[in-house]
Length: 432
Ligand code: GDP
Ligand code: MG
Image (cartoon, rainbow, N blue to C red; front, side, top):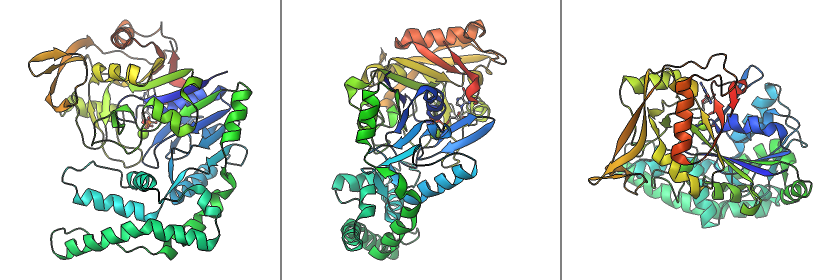
């Protein structure tokens, strides 16, 4: 078999969860590779809607081993709650279909407070989900953070680690509270967090997850030896990548294909397919450049028709036309082998559609993405929309205008389209 990977090509919420669940039907292992509970992946299957934040989107398939990889940062409370909710919804989560890497980093209560503190202090706000994901990665890089394996340490050793990890936080909040008192900031004060509190937090949630924590390497080795299909699930997206995206309006991990491979623990030469997931338009949650943004009635219509409200935060997503320059940029940087284009049903509701095929930049026409996106003005190609995908199950059955839309994406990017989404339900997937 092979190893396949699914990554986002825009600003997240392209429908990766749906693509992962779909591809997972032949997989033996599905590994969620990066990000934390700031991700929100939706799967509509068996007539039900499931929203995952930390659990791999394949968890709905009981015959697949769903794994949380070392590149993920996991909030113990959210993970425990998500497991309980999914079980309540009738989803099997047992030792034989779920594993957490012992190397996965843990998001603790103080990480969320730090996230809030940083956003308060920043003039140029990132618009984070406030879930302490970036601050967990920060502490991971500082090499003081706790990992899943630490939950099994003796009480004294674990408490010592927690104290070390909390030091910087408590120094920072003391200063922040001083500033607040000084009247510079008016937001709520930040709590001093004790070792005891975070120890209790760890013990409280350890109970629900300890059975799943394991060394994931031998499992992956075995799957590779058996030629089984391993599927790697990316979170967030290329343009939120901390190295390649719209820094500083980025996420704190590397959701490009290489970072995703690293987060899963599968080397690049073993990855046979990289499927880039995109929407037939663009949406973005949070702040940052958005060249093709529509702040008008058309943007509102796309938001309503596409249900563009965040899975994690419920925030209305910003919407705009498809930007093919942005997509093409990801082709080589992420080594794409195919594309999955979702929401072809949504965009077809508009009678006229625009697609960005270049930028006006400093008096020139360009077809690449410069670092100062804010100086780019979109150049559009206008296409005829007004199609319906109802009842369509094959590519050939799609109206000509819809097929032309897909052909334009393929021609511009040089990457073949493999899957097309024409509805939220996984059944509404067309294989090209
Ligand atoms: P992810 O974060 O990339 O997994 O994507 P999200 O699940 O956050 O957002 C994608 C949204 O679009 C979800 O509500 C999906 O149910 C929905 N969706 C995905 N593909 C399609 C599609 O082809 N058509 C329609 N109408 N909805 C879709
Ligand atoms: Mg999402």
